[in-house]
Length: 452
Image (tube, rainbow, N blue to C red; front, side, top):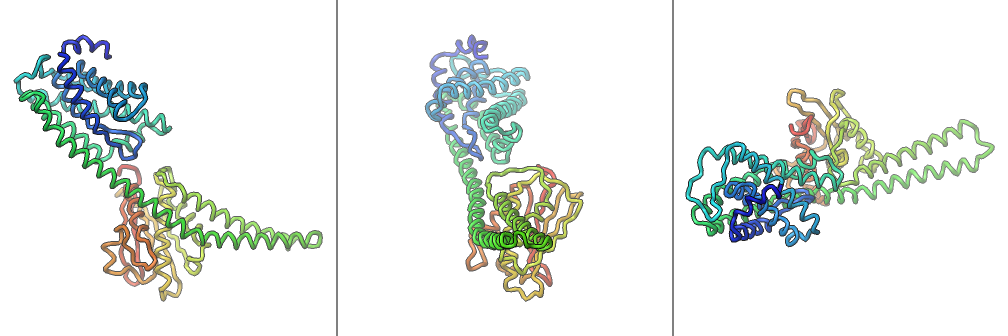
């Protein structure tokens, strides 16, 4: 591709080539990590598309390839073969956009020796828009492909997570729409007009960096809440495991002492106790392992089964000793794409809050009720966790999901905000209310399919 473009590239004066490479390098220096931190975005797309319109895509791909290779070595400290690969990827994306631009009637607007005075025509809007779309799609898919191969993830999922989210699309659109301003500035006053381009570019980078920092802080909130919850569970689970081990040890001693004299009925009774205690230990350890990972791992999940397993996991703990779990789970709730560990984190947080509220309850039978129902028309599943405790204080209702806000003397105030974030990551919503004549109810709505 570069070889076929070389004859037209040679017609551009060396001074203009050097100047445009410098401009591209300045734009390339504004690197920005994507939201996952596994891929990168630069602010150079504006310059790339401006070069395409001004010089044509054949000279542009050479300038972009040279600038991108140098930027990868200097700014990103990449090895030479990675720099060449990344430069090639960017050149291919620009060539694809340029080919579409040419096929739709787009023509270079600047002469080879300096700017021309023609104004931009309405006829170039459609070719330019098409070039922007093709450039974005090809460029991001190629990068996502490299990331997917290195991390063994699916291409479509990687592309969506790295680039196809609201803030990334808005930032890309803003960068693309700056390119006509570069073209107009260059055609009016030459390279001096490009100085004004870098100010909005810096503002876009700053806004994107703040958004990514905020999203990562929210994810850290989930991890912090998970660590706090693990600490609270450690003593409970350790106590229950110790009880189970004591029961197993005692029954094993009965076996040893009764070898040869124990009746079959007594042997069966001791074996049954050992089996039940071992099963309890298995439930506790499996639940803790399921809870441990922090990466988002959405997979086909039966929500009702997850609720049953979580209730079974917490029931042996002292905190829930007097509490009855009532599971009213609709049989028509289908399999959904969820992260089981993160959804378990939400459930355990709501169960824990319910248990804390029920400590001071005067209800004859403290109870936590969990309900699910399918809302087929809305394409949603509704999950409600309700207790029959004293309810939520009126002044706390508005601030429940704020970080560090808590109504408990020893609370850390990150459980509900983390739960809110998890549900938001699943495309759902969570809300709280007091139930007349009963306690508090948290209602979660989750989409049946991703993207709804």
